[in-house]
Image (cartoon, chains in turn yellow, cyan):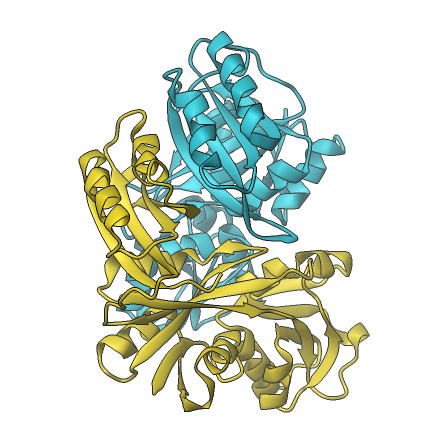
Length: 270
Length: 270
Protein backbone atom coordinates (compact mmCIF):
# COMPACT_ATOMS: atom_id res chain seq x y z
CA UNK A 1 0.00 0.00 0.00
CA UNK A 2 1.47 3.34 -1.09
CA UNK A 3 0.88 6.19 1.41
CA UNK A 4 1.81 9.75 0.38
CA UNK A 5 3.14 12.26 2.96
CA UNK A 6 4.47 15.82 2.96
CA UNK A 7 8.23 16.16 3.33
CA UNK A 8 11.32 14.07 2.72
CA UNK A 9 12.18 10.57 3.96
CA UNK A 10 12.75 10.89 7.71
CA UNK A 11 9.84 13.31 8.24
CA UNK A 12 7.55 12.83 11.26
CA UNK A 13 4.70 12.07 8.84
CA UNK A 14 6.67 9.09 7.51
CA UNK A 15 7.16 7.90 11.10
CA UNK A 16 3.40 8.18 11.65
CA UNK A 17 2.77 6.08 8.51
CA UNK A 18 5.03 3.29 9.78
CA UNK A 19 3.46 3.45 13.23
CA UNK A 20 -0.10 3.38 11.89
CA UNK A 21 0.20 0.94 8.98
CA UNK A 22 3.28 -1.09 9.89
CA UNK A 23 5.59 -2.71 7.36
CA UNK A 24 2.92 -3.12 4.69
CA UNK A 25 3.01 0.61 3.91
CA UNK A 26 5.28 2.14 1.30
CA UNK A 27 5.76 5.86 2.13
CA UNK A 28 5.64 8.21 -0.88
CA UNK A 29 7.28 11.63 -0.21
CA UNK A 30 5.82 14.84 -1.72
CA UNK A 31 7.13 18.43 -1.25
CA UNK A 32 3.89 20.22 -0.30
CA UNK A 33 0.63 19.28 1.41
CA UNK A 34 -1.37 19.87 -1.77
CA UNK A 35 0.92 17.38 -3.56
CA UNK A 36 -0.16 14.70 -1.06
CA UNK A 37 -3.80 15.30 -2.04
CA UNK A 38 -2.79 15.30 -5.74
CA UNK A 39 -0.90 12.00 -5.37
CA UNK A 40 -3.96 10.24 -3.92
CA UNK A 41 -6.36 11.82 -6.44
CA UNK A 42 -4.07 10.87 -9.37
CA UNK A 43 -3.60 7.29 -8.16
CA UNK A 44 0.15 7.73 -7.49
CA UNK A 45 -0.67 6.70 -3.91
CA UNK A 46 -3.49 4.64 -2.37
CA UNK A 47 -3.82 6.83 0.70
CA UNK A 48 -2.30 9.99 2.17
CA UNK A 49 -1.34 10.92 5.72
CA UNK A 50 -1.44 14.61 6.67
CA UNK A 51 -0.92 16.46 9.99
CA UNK A 52 -4.13 17.86 11.53
CA UNK A 53 -3.02 19.40 14.84
CA UNK A 54 -0.20 19.55 17.32
CA UNK A 55 -0.72 19.64 21.07
CA UNK A 56 1.62 22.64 21.51
CA UNK A 57 1.20 24.66 18.30
CA UNK A 58 -2.39 23.96 17.30
CA UNK A 59 -4.07 23.16 14.00
CA UNK A 60 -2.25 22.72 10.72
CA UNK A 61 -4.70 25.06 9.05
CA UNK A 62 -3.60 24.32 5.48
CA UNK A 63 -4.76 20.71 5.96
CA UNK A 64 -8.26 21.92 6.85
CA UNK A 65 -8.32 24.32 3.89
CA UNK A 66 -7.36 21.45 1.55
CA UNK A 67 -9.95 19.06 3.03
CA UNK A 68 -12.56 21.75 2.28
CA UNK A 69 -11.36 22.32 -1.31
CA UNK A 70 -10.74 18.72 -2.32
CA UNK A 71 -12.99 15.66 -2.44
CA UNK A 72 -10.85 13.20 -0.42
CA UNK A 73 -12.30 11.88 2.84
CA UNK A 74 -10.78 11.54 6.29
CA UNK A 75 -10.59 7.74 6.74
CA UNK A 76 -8.63 7.55 9.98
CA UNK A 77 -6.59 9.35 12.62
CA UNK A 78 -3.35 8.54 14.41
CA UNK A 79 -1.31 10.29 17.09
CA UNK A 80 2.51 10.48 17.20
CA UNK A 81 4.63 11.56 20.16
CA UNK A 82 7.07 14.14 18.75
CA UNK A 83 10.59 14.61 20.16
CA UNK A 84 12.77 17.14 18.41
CA UNK A 85 16.56 16.97 17.95
CA UNK A 86 19.08 19.58 16.91
CA UNK A 87 20.91 18.04 13.94
CA UNK A 88 24.09 19.21 12.19
CA UNK A 89 26.94 18.06 9.98
CA UNK A 90 29.51 15.90 11.76
CA UNK A 91 32.20 17.93 13.56
CA UNK A 92 29.92 20.95 14.02
CA UNK A 93 29.54 21.90 17.71
CA UNK A 94 26.70 23.67 19.53
CA UNK A 95 28.83 26.82 19.70
CA UNK A 96 29.17 26.92 15.89
CA UNK A 97 25.42 27.05 15.31
CA UNK A 98 23.99 30.48 14.49
CA UNK A 99 20.86 29.62 12.47
CA UNK A 100 18.36 26.78 12.88
CA UNK A 101 16.24 25.54 9.95
CA UNK A 102 12.99 23.60 10.27
CA UNK A 103 9.29 23.53 9.45
CA UNK A 104 7.65 26.54 11.12
CA UNK A 105 5.47 24.24 13.24
CA UNK A 106 8.58 22.52 14.66
CA UNK A 107 10.29 25.89 15.23
CA UNK A 108 7.18 26.98 17.14
CA UNK A 109 7.30 23.85 19.32
CA UNK A 110 10.95 24.65 20.22
CA UNK A 111 10.55 28.41 20.62
CA UNK A 112 11.76 28.53 24.25
CA UNK A 113 14.92 26.57 23.38
CA UNK A 114 15.75 28.83 20.42
CA UNK A 115 14.93 32.08 22.22
CA UNK A 116 16.97 31.07 25.26
CA UNK A 117 20.10 30.62 23.10
CA UNK A 118 19.41 33.57 20.75
CA UNK A 119 19.44 31.21 17.75
CA UNK A 120 17.97 32.59 14.52
CA UNK A 121 15.01 30.45 13.39
CA UNK A 122 14.65 30.00 9.62
CA UNK A 123 11.43 28.45 8.37
CA UNK A 124 11.86 25.62 5.82
CA UNK A 125 9.29 23.47 3.99
CA UNK A 126 10.01 20.31 6.00
CA UNK A 127 11.87 19.06 9.10
CA UNK A 128 13.77 16.23 7.38
CA UNK A 129 14.14 18.43 4.28
CA UNK A 130 16.07 20.97 6.36
CA UNK A 131 18.47 18.20 7.53
CA UNK A 132 18.98 17.17 3.89
CA UNK A 133 19.59 20.78 2.79
CA UNK A 134 22.18 21.40 5.54
CA UNK A 135 23.97 18.21 4.50
CA UNK A 136 23.79 18.95 0.74
CA UNK A 137 25.01 22.55 1.21
CA UNK A 138 27.64 21.49 3.76
CA UNK A 139 26.61 24.29 6.16
CA UNK A 140 28.87 24.57 9.25
CA UNK A 141 27.10 27.44 11.06
CA UNK A 142 23.58 26.01 10.87
CA UNK A 143 21.56 23.13 12.30
CA UNK A 144 18.11 21.63 11.67
CA UNK A 145 15.30 20.56 13.98
CA UNK A 146 13.98 17.10 13.08
CA UNK A 147 13.63 13.56 14.44
CA UNK A 148 16.44 11.16 15.46
CA UNK A 149 15.26 9.12 12.50
CA UNK A 150 15.99 12.02 10.12
CA UNK A 151 19.54 12.21 11.55
CA UNK A 152 19.97 8.49 10.83
CA UNK A 153 18.48 8.68 7.32
CA UNK A 154 20.93 11.44 6.31
CA UNK A 155 23.82 10.19 8.50
CA UNK A 156 24.12 13.43 10.48
CA UNK A 157 25.09 14.27 14.07
CA UNK A 158 22.57 14.89 16.88
CA UNK A 159 23.73 17.89 18.99
CA UNK A 160 20.79 17.97 21.42
CA UNK A 161 17.54 16.11 22.13
CA UNK A 162 14.11 17.01 23.56
CA UNK A 163 14.03 20.61 22.29
CA UNK A 164 10.23 20.89 22.50
CA UNK A 165 8.87 23.41 25.03
CA UNK A 166 6.81 20.74 26.77
CA UNK A 167 7.11 16.94 27.00
CA UNK A 168 3.45 16.51 26.14
CA UNK A 169 4.14 17.10 22.47
CA UNK A 170 1.88 15.09 20.14
CA UNK A 171 0.85 15.49 16.54
CA UNK A 172 -2.45 14.11 15.35
CA UNK A 173 -2.59 13.01 11.71
CA UNK A 174 -5.47 12.28 9.31
CA UNK A 175 -5.43 9.33 6.91
CA UNK A 176 -7.03 10.57 3.67
CA UNK A 177 -8.44 8.55 0.78
CA UNK A 178 -11.41 8.34 -1.56
CA UNK A 179 -13.59 5.93 0.46
CA UNK A 180 -16.23 6.47 3.12
CA UNK A 181 -15.43 4.27 6.13
CA UNK A 182 -18.30 2.43 7.85
CA UNK A 183 -19.08 2.60 11.59
CA UNK A 184 -17.01 0.60 14.12
CA UNK A 185 -18.92 1.59 17.27
CA UNK A 186 -16.21 4.01 18.45
CA UNK A 187 -15.95 6.71 15.81
CA UNK A 188 -15.45 10.37 15.27
CA UNK A 189 -16.60 12.70 12.48
CA UNK A 190 -14.96 15.85 11.17
CA UNK A 191 -17.45 18.32 9.70
CA UNK A 192 -17.04 21.72 8.01
CA UNK A 193 -19.89 24.21 7.86
CA UNK A 194 -20.75 27.86 7.40
CA UNK A 195 -23.47 29.44 9.54
CA UNK A 196 -25.74 32.25 8.37
CA UNK A 197 -24.17 35.63 9.12
CA UNK A 198 -26.49 36.70 11.97
CA UNK A 199 -26.11 36.68 15.80
CA UNK A 200 -26.49 33.37 17.61
CA UNK A 201 -26.04 31.00 14.66
CA UNK A 202 -22.80 29.41 15.91
CA UNK A 203 -24.52 28.63 19.20
CA UNK A 204 -27.55 27.14 17.38
CA UNK A 205 -25.29 24.97 15.30
CA UNK A 206 -23.50 23.54 18.34
CA UNK A 207 -26.79 22.98 20.14
CA UNK A 208 -27.80 20.50 17.40
CA UNK A 209 -25.09 18.17 18.72
CA UNK A 210 -25.09 19.00 22.44
CA UNK A 211 -28.85 18.52 22.84
CA UNK A 212 -28.29 14.88 21.69
CA UNK A 213 -25.27 14.38 23.99
CA UNK A 214 -23.00 14.16 20.97
CA UNK A 215 -19.65 15.29 22.32
CA UNK A 216 -17.77 18.14 20.61
CA UNK A 217 -14.02 17.36 20.76
CA UNK A 218 -12.60 20.29 18.81
CA UNK A 219 -13.66 23.47 17.04
CA UNK A 220 -11.56 25.41 14.59
CA UNK A 221 -12.46 28.46 12.51
CA UNK A 222 -10.98 29.47 9.15
CA UNK A 223 -11.69 32.63 7.17
CA UNK A 224 -13.79 32.41 4.00
CA UNK A 225 -11.86 33.89 1.05
CA UNK A 226 -13.76 36.83 -0.43
CA UNK A 227 -16.00 37.24 2.65
CA UNK A 228 -13.89 39.11 5.23
CA UNK A 229 -14.63 38.30 8.90
CA UNK A 230 -16.87 35.35 8.05
CA UNK A 231 -15.67 31.85 8.93
CA UNK A 232 -15.95 28.19 8.08
CA UNK A 233 -16.12 26.12 11.27
CA UNK A 234 -14.49 22.71 11.51
CA UNK A 235 -15.76 20.49 14.32
CA UNK A 236 -14.93 17.00 15.56
CA UNK A 237 -17.91 15.11 16.98
CA UNK A 238 -17.63 11.75 18.80
CA UNK A 239 -20.01 9.80 16.53
CA UNK A 240 -20.20 8.26 13.07
CA UNK A 241 -22.24 10.07 10.41
CA UNK A 242 -24.47 6.97 10.00
CA UNK A 243 -25.57 6.90 13.66
CA UNK A 244 -29.26 7.92 14.03
CA UNK A 245 -28.60 10.73 16.56
CA UNK A 246 -25.90 12.13 14.31
CA UNK A 247 -28.26 12.03 11.32
CA UNK A 248 -30.81 14.00 13.36
CA UNK A 249 -28.19 16.52 14.45
CA UNK A 250 -26.99 17.04 10.88
CA UNK A 251 -30.62 17.53 9.79
CA UNK A 252 -31.04 20.24 12.46
CA UNK A 253 -27.67 21.78 11.59
CA UNK A 254 -28.85 22.26 8.00
CA UNK A 255 -31.49 24.72 9.30
CA UNK A 256 -28.92 27.26 10.58
CA UNK A 257 -26.28 26.77 7.91
CA UNK A 258 -25.96 27.37 4.20
CA UNK A 259 -23.07 24.93 3.70
CA UNK A 260 -22.14 21.59 5.28
CA UNK A 261 -19.43 19.17 4.21
CA UNK A 262 -18.76 15.98 6.14
CA UNK A 263 -15.02 15.57 5.76
CA UNK A 264 -15.14 12.02 7.08
CA UNK A 265 -16.19 9.55 9.78
CA UNK A 266 -13.43 7.29 11.08
CA UNK A 267 -12.39 5.04 13.98
CA UNK A 268 -11.56 7.16 17.00
CA UNK A 269 -8.03 6.96 18.37
CA UNK A 270 -7.68 10.10 20.50
CA UNK B 1 4.09 58.70 20.68
CA UNK B 2 6.36 55.71 20.07
CA UNK B 3 4.53 52.63 18.68
CA UNK B 4 6.43 49.34 18.42
CA UNK B 5 5.74 46.89 15.56
CA UNK B 6 7.13 43.56 14.33
CA UNK B 7 9.33 43.76 11.25
CA UNK B 8 11.46 46.33 9.48
CA UNK B 9 10.58 49.82 8.24
CA UNK B 10 8.19 49.33 5.32
CA UNK B 11 6.26 46.47 6.99
CA UNK B 12 2.46 46.40 6.75
CA UNK B 13 2.31 46.89 10.51
CA UNK B 14 4.14 50.22 10.12
CA UNK B 15 1.61 51.22 7.46
CA UNK B 16 -1.20 50.35 9.89
CA UNK B 17 0.44 52.53 12.58
CA UNK B 18 0.53 55.54 10.24
CA UNK B 19 -3.05 54.92 9.11
CA UNK B 20 -4.35 54.53 12.68
CA UNK B 21 -2.34 57.20 14.53
CA UNK B 22 -1.33 59.60 11.76
CA UNK B 23 1.80 61.72 11.83
CA UNK B 24 2.00 61.91 15.63
CA UNK B 25 3.20 58.28 15.81
CA UNK B 26 6.85 57.30 15.74
CA UNK B 27 7.09 53.64 14.57
CA UNK B 28 9.63 51.51 16.50
CA UNK B 29 10.69 48.33 14.61
CA UNK B 30 11.35 45.06 16.47
CA UNK B 31 12.37 41.68 14.94
CA UNK B 32 9.83 39.35 16.62
CA UNK B 33 6.31 39.69 18.00
CA UNK B 34 7.49 39.03 21.55
CA UNK B 35 9.93 41.94 21.18
CA UNK B 36 6.97 44.26 20.52
CA UNK B 37 5.45 43.19 23.86
CA UNK B 38 8.86 43.60 25.53
CA UNK B 39 9.31 47.10 24.08
CA UNK B 40 5.98 48.29 25.55
CA UNK B 41 6.56 46.56 28.89
CA UNK B 42 10.07 48.04 29.20
CA UNK B 43 8.94 51.55 28.27
CA UNK B 44 10.93 51.63 25.01
CA UNK B 45 7.58 52.28 23.32
CA UNK B 46 4.29 53.79 24.55
CA UNK B 47 2.11 51.36 22.61
CA UNK B 48 2.46 48.38 20.31
CA UNK B 49 0.57 47.36 17.18
CA UNK B 50 0.35 43.64 16.38
CA UNK B 51 -1.53 41.66 13.67
CA UNK B 52 -4.54 39.68 14.96
CA UNK B 53 -6.07 38.10 11.86
CA UNK B 54 -6.08 38.22 8.09
CA UNK B 55 -9.21 37.80 6.00
CA UNK B 56 -7.59 35.15 3.75
CA UNK B 57 -5.17 33.31 6.06
CA UNK B 58 -6.85 33.54 9.45
CA UNK B 59 -5.57 34.31 12.92
CA UNK B 60 -2.01 35.23 13.77
CA UNK B 61 -1.99 32.67 16.55
CA UNK B 62 1.28 33.81 18.13
CA UNK B 63 -0.36 37.17 18.93
CA UNK B 64 -3.12 35.38 20.87
CA UNK B 65 -0.58 33.21 22.71
CA UNK B 66 1.37 36.34 23.73
CA UNK B 67 -1.77 38.21 24.85
CA UNK B 68 -2.49 35.24 27.10
CA UNK B 69 1.05 35.10 28.56
CA UNK B 70 1.67 38.82 29.00
CA UNK B 71 -0.15 41.51 30.95
CA UNK B 72 -0.64 44.10 28.19
CA UNK B 73 -4.22 44.98 27.21
CA UNK B 74 -5.86 45.30 23.82
CA UNK B 75 -6.64 49.04 23.63
CA UNK B 76 -7.84 49.29 20.04
CA UNK B 77 -8.22 47.65 16.66
CA UNK B 78 -7.57 48.81 13.10
CA UNK B 79 -8.01 47.20 9.68
CA UNK B 80 -5.59 47.58 6.75
CA UNK B 81 -6.27 46.62 3.13
CA UNK B 82 -3.25 44.55 2.07
CA UNK B 83 -1.96 44.50 -1.53
CA UNK B 84 1.14 42.44 -2.16
CA UNK B 85 3.90 43.19 -4.69
CA UNK B 86 6.71 41.06 -6.05
CA UNK B 87 9.88 43.05 -5.36
CA UNK B 88 13.42 42.48 -6.66
CA UNK B 89 16.75 44.19 -7.25
CA UNK B 90 16.76 46.59 -10.20
CA UNK B 91 17.46 44.88 -13.54
CA UNK B 92 16.10 41.51 -12.34
CA UNK B 93 13.23 40.28 -14.57
CA UNK B 94 10.30 37.98 -13.75
CA UNK B 95 12.01 35.16 -15.66
CA UNK B 96 15.11 35.38 -13.41
CA UNK B 97 13.11 34.74 -10.21
CA UNK B 98 13.32 31.19 -8.85
CA UNK B 99 12.67 31.73 -5.11
CA UNK B 100 10.33 34.12 -3.33
CA UNK B 101 10.95 35.24 0.27
CA UNK B 102 8.33 36.64 2.62
CA UNK B 103 6.54 36.22 5.93
CA UNK B 104 4.66 32.91 5.87
CA UNK B 105 1.33 34.70 6.24
CA UNK B 106 2.03 36.76 3.09
CA UNK B 107 3.21 33.65 1.21
CA UNK B 108 -0.07 31.97 2.18
CA UNK B 109 -2.10 34.93 0.88
CA UNK B 110 -0.30 34.63 -2.50
CA UNK B 111 -0.29 30.81 -2.73
CA UNK B 112 -2.20 30.64 -6.05
CA UNK B 113 0.21 33.10 -7.71
CA UNK B 114 3.29 31.19 -6.51
CA UNK B 115 1.89 27.72 -7.30
CA UNK B 116 0.79 28.82 -10.78
CA UNK B 117 4.37 29.88 -11.63
CA UNK B 118 6.13 27.04 -9.76
CA UNK B 119 8.04 29.56 -7.64
CA UNK B 120 9.69 28.22 -4.50
CA UNK B 121 8.32 29.97 -1.41
CA UNK B 122 10.83 30.62 1.39
CA UNK B 123 9.46 31.74 4.72
CA UNK B 124 11.21 34.78 6.27
CA UNK B 125 10.61 36.66 9.53
CA UNK B 126 9.10 39.74 7.88
CA UNK B 127 7.80 41.04 4.53
CA UNK B 128 9.89 44.23 4.43
CA UNK B 129 12.77 42.33 6.05
CA UNK B 130 12.85 39.96 3.07
CA UNK B 131 13.12 42.97 0.69
CA UNK B 132 16.02 44.32 2.78
CA UNK B 133 17.76 40.92 2.82
CA UNK B 134 17.47 40.50 -0.97
CA UNK B 135 18.94 43.98 -1.42
CA UNK B 136 21.73 43.49 1.15
CA UNK B 137 22.71 40.08 -0.31
CA UNK B 138 22.38 41.35 -3.90
CA UNK B 139 20.32 38.28 -4.90
CA UNK B 140 19.51 38.13 -8.65
CA UNK B 141 17.44 34.90 -8.71
CA UNK B 142 15.09 35.78 -5.86
CA UNK B 143 12.29 38.24 -5.09
CA UNK B 144 10.30 39.25 -2.01
CA UNK B 145 6.60 39.73 -1.36
CA UNK B 146 5.91 43.00 0.45
CA UNK B 147 4.13 46.37 0.04
CA UNK B 148 4.83 49.07 -2.57
CA UNK B 149 5.98 51.11 0.39
CA UNK B 150 8.65 48.53 1.23
CA UNK B 151 9.90 48.76 -2.37
CA UNK B 152 10.17 52.55 -1.97
CA UNK B 153 11.86 52.39 1.45
CA UNK B 154 14.62 50.10 0.10
CA UNK B 155 14.67 51.61 -3.43
CA UNK B 156 13.88 48.33 -5.17
CA UNK B 157 11.92 47.39 -8.32
CA UNK B 158 8.29 46.20 -8.33
CA UNK B 159 7.92 43.27 -10.80
CA UNK B 160 4.20 42.57 -10.21
CA UNK B 161 1.29 43.90 -8.13
CA UNK B 162 -1.86 42.41 -6.58
CA UNK B 163 -0.44 38.93 -5.92
CA UNK B 164 -3.01 38.08 -3.22
CA UNK B 165 -5.41 35.22 -4.06
CA UNK B 166 -8.44 37.43 -3.48
CA UNK B 167 -8.97 41.23 -3.60
CA UNK B 168 -10.77 41.16 -0.27
CA UNK B 169 -7.49 40.93 1.62
CA UNK B 170 -7.51 42.74 4.95
CA UNK B 171 -5.43 42.43 8.08
CA UNK B 172 -6.88 43.38 11.44
CA UNK B 173 -4.40 44.69 14.03
CA UNK B 174 -4.59 45.16 17.79
CA UNK B 175 -3.20 48.22 19.56
CA UNK B 176 -1.63 46.99 22.81
CA UNK B 177 -0.69 48.97 25.91
CA UNK B 178 -0.89 48.92 29.68
CA UNK B 179 -4.16 50.84 30.15
CA UNK B 180 -7.79 49.73 30.34
CA UNK B 181 -9.84 51.80 27.90
CA UNK B 182 -13.26 53.08 29.04
CA UNK B 183 -16.53 52.54 27.12
CA UNK B 184 -17.39 54.67 24.06
CA UNK B 185 -20.85 53.17 23.34
CA UNK B 186 -19.62 51.09 20.37
CA UNK B 187 -17.07 48.66 21.74
CA UNK B 188 -15.78 45.14 21.48
CA UNK B 189 -14.09 42.86 24.03
CA UNK B 190 -11.59 40.10 23.44
CA UNK B 191 -11.71 37.39 26.12
CA UNK B 192 -9.68 34.21 26.69
CA UNK B 193 -11.05 31.32 28.76
CA UNK B 194 -10.71 27.63 29.47
CA UNK B 195 -13.84 25.53 29.99
CA UNK B 196 -14.02 22.49 32.26
CA UNK B 197 -13.05 19.34 30.37
CA UNK B 198 -16.52 17.75 30.13
CA UNK B 199 -19.15 17.59 27.33
CA UNK B 200 -21.25 20.66 26.64
CA UNK B 201 -19.09 23.25 28.42
CA UNK B 202 -18.17 25.21 25.27
CA UNK B 203 -21.87 25.51 24.43
CA UNK B 204 -22.69 26.65 28.00
CA UNK B 205 -19.98 29.28 27.85
CA UNK B 206 -21.32 30.75 24.59
CA UNK B 207 -24.88 30.70 25.90
CA UNK B 208 -23.85 33.17 28.64
CA UNK B 209 -23.43 35.79 25.90
CA UNK B 210 -26.08 34.71 23.37
CA UNK B 211 -28.89 34.60 25.96
CA UNK B 212 -28.20 38.33 26.55
CA UNK B 213 -28.07 39.15 22.82
CA UNK B 214 -24.36 39.90 23.10
CA UNK B 215 -23.03 39.18 19.64
CA UNK B 216 -20.12 36.77 19.17
CA UNK B 217 -17.93 38.09 16.32
CA UNK B 218 -15.11 35.54 16.34
CA UNK B 219 -13.98 32.38 18.10
CA UNK B 220 -10.50 30.93 18.00
CA UNK B 221 -9.07 27.93 19.85
CA UNK B 222 -5.47 27.39 20.90
CA UNK B 223 -3.96 24.30 22.51
CA UNK B 224 -2.98 24.42 26.19
CA UNK B 225 0.71 23.45 26.59
CA UNK B 226 1.01 20.35 28.78
CA UNK B 227 -2.67 19.41 28.39
CA UNK B 228 -2.97 17.70 24.99
CA UNK B 229 -6.32 18.14 23.17
CA UNK B 230 -7.57 20.78 25.62
CA UNK B 231 -7.97 24.34 24.37
CA UNK B 232 -8.06 27.97 25.39
CA UNK B 233 -10.88 29.77 23.56
CA UNK B 234 -10.51 33.37 22.42
CA UNK B 235 -13.76 35.18 21.66
CA UNK B 236 -14.67 38.66 20.45
CA UNK B 237 -17.95 39.99 21.88
CA UNK B 238 -19.63 43.21 20.71
CA UNK B 239 -19.77 44.94 24.09
CA UNK B 240 -17.53 46.67 26.63
CA UNK B 241 -16.59 44.78 29.79
CA UNK B 242 -18.18 47.53 31.93
CA UNK B 243 -21.64 47.19 30.34
CA UNK B 244 -24.13 45.61 32.79
CA UNK B 245 -25.21 42.76 30.45
CA UNK B 246 -21.57 41.92 29.80
CA UNK B 247 -20.87 41.88 33.55
CA UNK B 248 -23.74 39.42 33.99
CA UNK B 249 -22.50 37.24 31.14
CA UNK B 250 -18.97 37.16 32.57
CA UNK B 251 -20.43 36.21 35.95
CA UNK B 252 -22.28 33.28 34.35
CA UNK B 253 -19.23 32.32 32.28
CA UNK B 254 -17.24 31.93 35.50
CA UNK B 255 -19.54 29.03 36.46
CA UNK B 256 -18.47 26.81 33.54
CA UNK B 257 -14.83 27.86 33.34
CA UNK B 258 -11.76 27.56 35.51
CA UNK B 259 -9.88 30.42 33.84
CA UNK B 260 -10.97 33.76 32.34
CA UNK B 261 -8.78 36.63 31.17
CA UNK B 262 -10.26 39.75 29.61
CA UNK B 263 -7.61 40.74 27.08
CA UNK B 264 -9.22 44.11 26.55
CA UNK B 265 -12.29 46.21 25.70
CA UNK B 266 -11.81 48.76 22.94
CA UNK B 267 -13.64 50.95 20.39
CA UNK B 268 -15.04 48.78 17.63
CA UNK B 269 -13.81 49.41 14.09
CA UNK B 270 -14.74 46.23 12.21
